Amino acid sequence: MTEVAGEVSTEGLVLQRLREQCGDALLDVKVWRHETTILVAPHDLLRVCKYLRDEREIAFDFLSSVVGVDRLTLPDSSPRFEVVYHLYSIQYKRRLRLKVRVHEGEAVPSVTAVWESANWHEREVFDLFGVVFQDHPDLRRILMPEDWEGHPLRKDYPVEASPKWWEEEPA
Amino acid sequence: MTTARTMTLNMGPQHPSTHGVLRLVLELDGEVVVRCEPHIGYLHTGIEKGLESKRYQQGIPLTDRLDYLAPLSNNLAYVLAIEKALGIEVPERAQTIRVLLTELTRIKSHLVWLGTHAMDIGAMSVFLYCFREREQILDMYEAVSGQRLMSSYFRVGGVVADLPPGFEAQVQAFLATFPSRLEEYEALLTQNPLWRQRTVGIGTIRAADAIALGVSGPALRACGVAYDVRRANPYSGYERYQFDVPIGKVGDVYERYTIRIAEMRQSRLIAGQALQRLQPGPINVADPKLIPPPKALLKTSMEALIHHFKLYSEGFSVPAGEVYQAVEAPKGELGVYLVSDGGNRPYRVHYRAPSFANLQALPRMVEGRLVADVIAVIGSLDIVLGEIDR
Image 1 (cartoon, chains in turn yellow, green):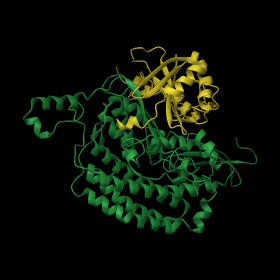
Image 2 (cartoon, one colour):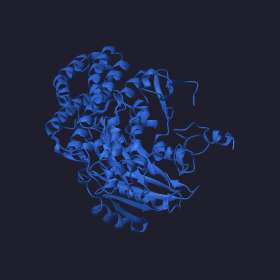
Image 3 (cartoon, rainbow over the protein chains, first blue to last red):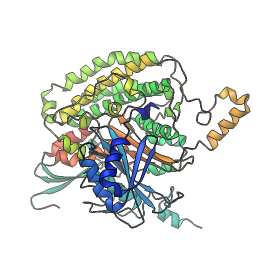
Image 4 (cartoon, rainbow over the protein chains, first blue to last red):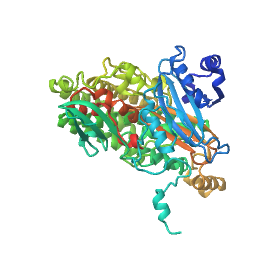
């Protein structure tokens, strides 16, 4: 489809460079619908991110978004949480998806030192999923009230009522 | 945080110039802003959670409510993401209709921005002029979908209905008069010394900072970075249209103004090209699993009846996987990240809202400046809290 044809494939150069420089960090590489997804371990995240931003032939200078996914009801649900980074290179017009997976309570290194824009995005993931970001400068809730209990985008969080109303409902 | 020298001031969440329910905690030293801390979330409605419990087609009306000034851009990103995951491409006519309507949406969104931005700064009459033209675009929304604001006109696989008779003439008439309307706005503002005093050199940000902070859209282009998703990663056939990507130099409030005015001219040109490209043809993909059969067929064809029943009771399934689809919304890069587990409802939908990222750059633009400039800078960012808080 034209929507896909316009996007420059990231497979060639980026993957080749990544394999040379951080080959040990790549746990999994998937290409689906012309989009490349790379899975790395949390302790390798910062190293890979810095490389992707600073390597001049790749230059992923723009962080589009940081997204949380609760994998609780997927067939392979461990580790439970996935944090997904959408990178973009303004110069080369390429996109790349980078992921880490963590268990409940396990921290993800914050990428705010690499891309400043990660600040609010990581706060959102913390707020809605309860994933903690290590070395984040200001890790507070952002969308929900400060005294809110629970993390609404988790799969075991009810859709239609807050937990308090849920418990008060007669059996 | 308040010291003997400084004072803390809450601007919002019910302040008329914060464009919705934005709250800024300002630390002031006299009239100078020492620190600015945005507080968001007052309009959080759980749209992303809601989308997870709705079948793919049912989610479209929810997306209208994100950036409620540009509902069709939100629709477009959502349906394109689903179409990418399904691996389908909509027919030429549907693509052209989508381009035509989203460019009109850009003009409509920019008109609300211009009217309210000018009113914030004190130029009251511009608002009335802008809303006069916006009304004509709302009439077009009504003509195609029956709805003036939350039109939900786009569908997975195409659009909900073909353009009504006389629609092309209606758009043509609007496009013919619009340049003279733009000149009216510009006559009121562009060379106006008061307007220039309030906007030139105010709220500047360097290109490198803007990129690091994830700023996109007219606010990024004002810094001289020519990043426009329509040009960089074309979708819906944008590579076939001739248009310029206006860019600025210093990235101040004034340049964000001139760039959006220039963008309205470009959108008018694109819409004109789309009208010329409109050829008769199907407006939906030929897949009965995605598109309901014609009403008349239901009475004669058992198969059509089954497809109709399945579509409305069960919906359709999307292969397991994940996609990211970005479109150039009036405010910047609007990206939908869609995760499918193979079922008939999205497993996870995330909206990368351009206003969310752009607002994060606000403190950088106002700290060290006068408190009165905060109003001008917020207006120049063109934020919509509906998509920030989701």
